[in-house]
Image (cartoon, rainbow, N blue to C red; front, side):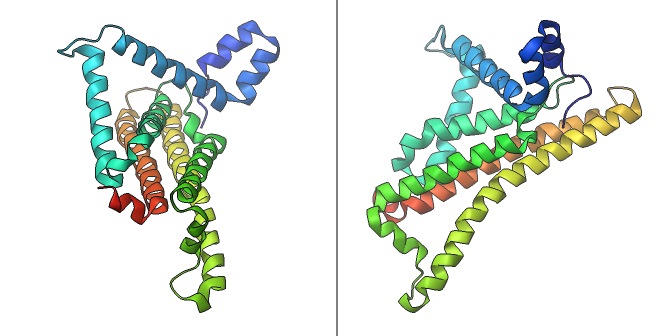
Length: 235
């Protein structure tokens, strides 16, 4: 949900031309770039002077990375280390996108279906790529069910089930973030004072983290299922 005035759009209007058109037509892309820029700058500042006794941003980043890493290991197992950069990036990126929508004059990219669907497609594609790499052609057996006689029916059901993950992943995040932004915007416009919708913003901060946690957890579960028994043998 867009705020009445978005500061990047105002800056783009001062520049004019196609930049202004782009800012108003594709704010989700513009603010996604902004989130990525902020994360790159923060990461650079946190790692510019690494010390044995961490402090400041280095300490914060180390805590966040360790929490996400331990969480992933508990869900996916040790052989999932190769997926850690993606899982950590997914959680942090989604949280910052959600949080950005709470800032006046800004915009939450995850309140746009194009962004959440793009994330869902990445998770969906990676899940089946991992399944094919882990099991080869035998991966198709995951869609056939336990009884050969039911294989044609189970194949159709499994295909529909897996495709529904795209809808579930994208719509869940999109709907929750857009709903929160809409409520905050309505409260702000009706109340006329910023402190009135403040409790809702604190709730939005919590649910923003919760949505980032859920989509990352689902990605971990889907990939773990695709890896199947091979993952269990790796412990």
